Structure formats: structure tokens, C-alpha cells
Amino acid sequence: MTSYRKLTKYYMEHRPRHGMDKVRSVLRSEWAAGPWNEECDDFYFTHRRVHCLGWRNHLGVWCGYVGVWRGHPWFGKDYSDVEMDAPGGLTYSGKLYPKPGHPWFLGFDCGHSYDYTPGLATVFEAAGASCGPPESAYKTMPYVIYCLCEMAGEVRSAA
Image (tube, rainbow, N blue to C red):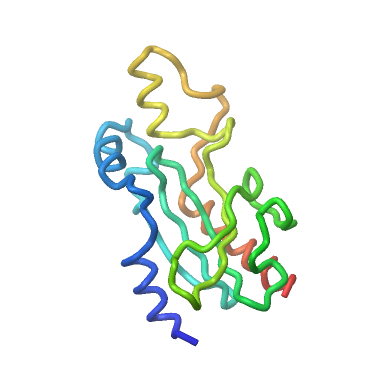
């Protein structure tokens, strides 16, 4: 099996960007000040030997993913068939990298109706409208890391 250090380097160099890099850089410069100004745009770590990735999408919200390896009961399953506690529920399942030997990922996003979305808020505020209910909250990077650690525990328990 490939070492974690090599996988970390590979994930950070080849993570899917879905063609949104240019959009992200333009919109991010226009976002209002907030906790996202002090955060990076992506991260990778392992917890309980489970690969955990996070990156900010083009609207400024975090997306988080945990990897499961071949042989795990959730490998190859659609996210709707996996019972896992994730913020807003699971919204993704699949391979993030086309090369063989990489895990199957299960993921979530923090862009639901009660989540504050910096990129979308900028567009709404420019139009004189509000983005979401007043009690909406931005999900921070530490929150996403905590959720990924909890999900990694669920992955290990289900193995």
C-alpha cells in the first residue's frame, strides 16, 4: 500500500478542483470579512488511519470527505445507502481520483439552508437581499475537522 506521506502529497497536488479555481479566486476577493479570511482553502489528514479531506467550494463553504478502502462494507456504495452522521447528511460518494488503488470517498457539504455561504451572501447583498435566515451560521474549518474525525470513527466502527 502507498504510504500516507505519499498519498498526502498526491492528494494535495491532484485534488479535484472541478474547474472552479478561477471562479473561486475572483469571488473570494469580493467576499465580506469573516472567519474564512483566516482559513486555508483545503486540508488533508488521517484520523484512525482514515483519509480525511476538506476543501472550500466556489461558494465559500467547506466540503468534507472520508475515504474507505476496498473490502470495507461502504466501498462502492451510493451515499444514500450509507448510514453515517454528517452535517446536513451525506451528499457525495465516489472516487475523487481516477487512479486505481485510491479509496472510495463519502462526503458532505456545509452549504445547506441554515449555513452561511460567503460567496452567495456577496451576490445577494449586492442585490440588496439577505442570504438565508438571520440565524444562519458559517461552518468553520475546525468544525469540519471535528466532523471528519467523528466520521472517521464511524468508518472504523463499520469495518
